[in-house]
Length: 137
Image 1 (cartoon, one colour):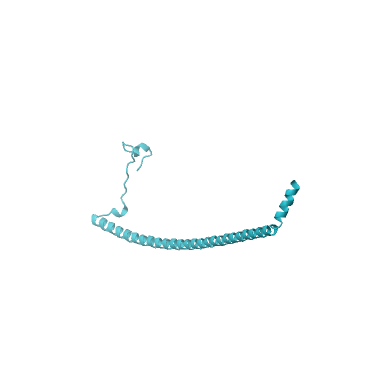
Image 2: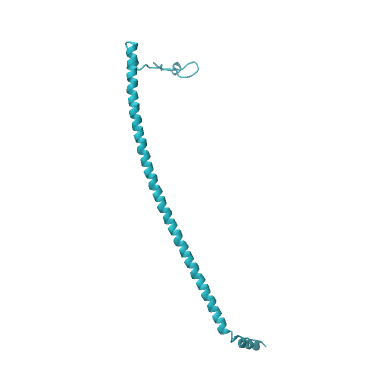
């Protein structure tokens, strides 16, 4: 029994004194009865441990199945998202390509118009140049 004085429960080195209790099953009238009782306790605890082990295995398998299902669902979702991003990327590439073609077509049209205007104005150029020079002389 522990004393109310804290120093009484410690050895000279300051460690707690060990208190041992003997299990009831070990308290027997005869050594053989105690041995048999211990054997029975061990067998009972062994079957209980086996039952707990089976429960733990079942729980582990259930958790493993649940995690596998969640991971597969996440993988499918990631695949869908990847496909959506790829589709958006392809669409933006098509749009960029279309805009590039439109810009190139517009540039070509403007060059053609510029060439046509130069061609129309070319016959008048010498006359205008002569008139321009005459105005300054």
